[in-house]
Amino acid sequence: MLFKAPDAKILIVDDSAINLEIAAGLLATFEIQCRTALSGYEALDMVEKEHFDLILMDHMMPGMDGIDTAKTIRALVPSAKNTPIIALTANVVEGSREMYLRAGMVGLVPKPIDVKVLTDMLDKWLPSGKKIEVSDGGEKQVTDKNRVPLFDCLDCDKALELLGSEQVFKNIVSDYYKRGKEAQKAIENAKNLGILDEYARLAHTLKSSSRQIGAYELGDLAEKLEQAGKASDTATIGEYHTKTMKMFEELLQNLSKYFM
Image (cartoon, rainbow, N blue to C red; front, side, top):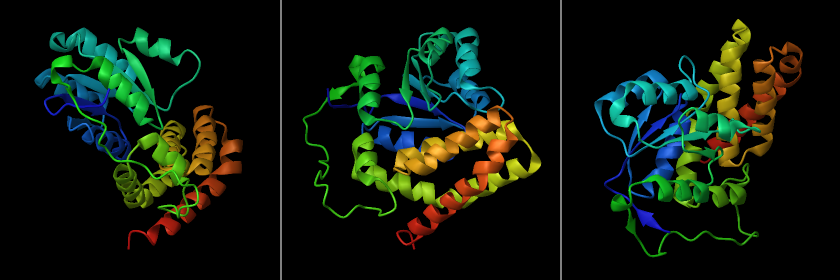
């Protein structure tokens, strides 16, 4: 079903600003009202003060993660007892769906986000009275594999297949580029200070955001750093950190010509 829902209100919870931008950009195509929170604590405060039709919840967040946030909302906010909470996460391993359901969530949308999966979840869990069916007059993607890509350093066709909108894709790549130097600095600082849980969290964000824009090799390297950080595996970090950061730097340099 194709629909818009201008009267619906969704809270997106994620500690990464770029991941918030990605989710909000996709929801904007449905004309949904979006609010964002950068932590579980901020989300809890917002849910206590206002009503949301649905909550999209990241898992890996510092302080109070998505699992604890969902459980706390269910336990302490009576008005949100029945508000659908959907995990929006790159932490998808065997048994993860059951883990999210036990925490009081109703489903899972993996990162990188596939707009078709997101659409199905929204269609299922948004109040039917707030959805307005629309005809299939939306943006059509060019499928000619011989066309010049939007960004020559990214797998644009695969990214567009997930996102479903060229404009959303352009906006997301722009946000990725603008926040790139800050992300680089944060990862380097966490490594130099030996804060491996923070290092793993930042590598996790780099993994999901890179894959979302079609930088899959970088995303795969970032996953190695994420897993190494979680395991306190300094040998693997030593093996892959410099290579990953060099690839990240080269990607940002290649993108710079599009955002002069």
